[in-house]
Length: 301
Image 1 (tube, rainbow, N blue to C red):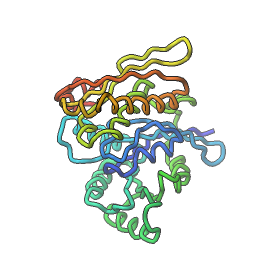
Image 2 (cartoon, rainbow, N blue to C red; image 1 turned 90 degrees about the vertical axis):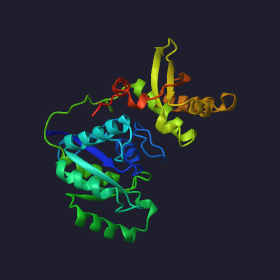
Image 3 (cartoon, one colour; image 1 turned 120 degrees about the vertical axis):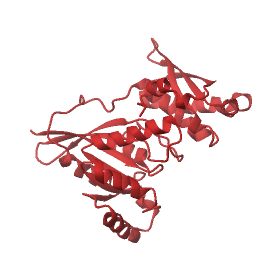
Image 4 (cartoon, helix red, strand yellow; image 1 turned 180 degrees about the vertical axis):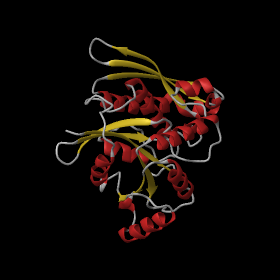
């Protein structure tokens, strides 16, 4: 039996649907996804075992990468560095394009850089369930005319339309070699990290626009209990006093709502009861702090 293993990068502009597609291909909810841009901050690995012809098997290591945008802070530059490094290291780089916006100005520069750095650039038109089907072929043709891709796929990460075909095509494109992960491991990230990310997702979804981008979440403590449950303490760091007040809310209503929803999601992900406590602190300039970025798993470019 021939084994295959390779890295597949999901890259694109913010809100192209990379994280939703990542979760769909993985068959598990590992990467947080919100309607707001710049949700993904790290290189997140998810492992898919996909059969190929005959007795062959392919380990497809998907990489959900930060979106490509104009950086302002050290955090932004570290996120962009992580994204481009992931694309350069991949065996196949999937440029995810929102089919509704098509050849927006942000797509061209990303495609040009992928053509220079990626070994195997593929085009994936996402959100095809939200556009008229006759518009898809002209859009794909126009993008390929500007920046030729090796393969082109049309998918809906939300409905799953076209995603099975994409996985089936990725499997034989992986290079021959031993699998990198044990059969029962689906990610390179820890449960502590996942808990913090699910809290951060609720910060994005339940707070004003100014708060999410100036906030980060870290798991402070993790206590395994005799009854099989886990007690988690997490801290949400924001840049300013006003943002702390927004997150806490009147009488603590918002922080309770964030905690209740995050606790339910963490319990679902871990498959056991969870006790979650949250606190909010002010850390002015945390997004320019090299040590803080290292703690978050990012490299200072």
